[in-house]
Amino acid sequence: PSITRGITVDIPKVTWKDIGGLKDLKKKLEQAVEWPMKHAATFSRLGITPVRGILLHGPPGCSKTTLAKAAANAANVPFFSLSGAELFSMYVGEGEGLLRNTFRKARLAGKSIIFFDEADVVAGKRGDGSSGGAVVGERLLSTLLTEMDGLEEAKGVLVLAATNRPYAIDAALMRPGRFDLVLYVPPPDLEGRFEILNVHTSKMNLGSDVDLRRLAEDTELFTGAELKGLCNEAGIVALRENIHASVVCDRHFQIVKNSLKPALTTEEID
Ligand code: ATP
Image (cartoon, rainbow, N blue to C red):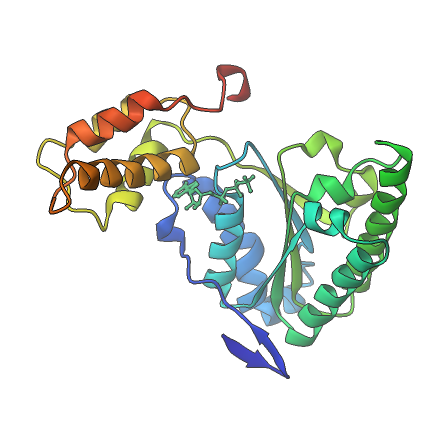
């Protein structure tokens, strides 16, 4: 962790290379996050306004959080994390306090990223939900709007939000100067699954019978998180079979794969 004026902040360690697939998406994020952070002078010389907020949406476990962290790593800026569900569950006033405090820390840090997970819980359409919860949600949402608008002067703070329910996001957040860029993070395709399996087996000693290309073909509908779990579980099966095991073989992967049922359904793809 580096110290910025008394605040301990972390620059995430995860890099673009740790994320399999999503080549175009990584390029777009690089342009929207890294360029303004690293070449602020060029942006102002050319009179270009960088995006202030990016909304990542897509099914769970498909790397929204990891992408946000990798973007912070690439831009070499601190990463502040907020969870919509956590803010929502706090006592009245406490959630708003944490929200304001996080924005304050980010402004103090200068160039930085605020990542807002499960954004729909807080940034949901006004008028949704039951009476008690709706009041809490509205107060949090109006705090978020105030803080995002206040970023105008504080150069270099970028807000990345993630949601599985983009249609539930309040329209006020989609106005210019707020979430200007909306990116869909899809479940991995064949090539993506192959790359993800490579990422998560890179530190494993694989048996010569392991064919990751075939495994990628056989894991349609698996998310990145499920593929990561598959690799890890296969290692555990090998260990359980023999505590002195030194390789993870195809049969270990097969045992785990056959016991898993992906959470995604075909309708959720596209
Ligand atoms: P949620 O909506 O549940 O918060 P998410 O989309 O933010 O999920 P992550 O938390 O980034 O997903 O991913 C979950 C785990 O799956 C991470 O540990 C990550 O390493 C792994 N993972 C997901 N997608 C990929 C990918 N494309 N390449 C490598 N690992 C991945």
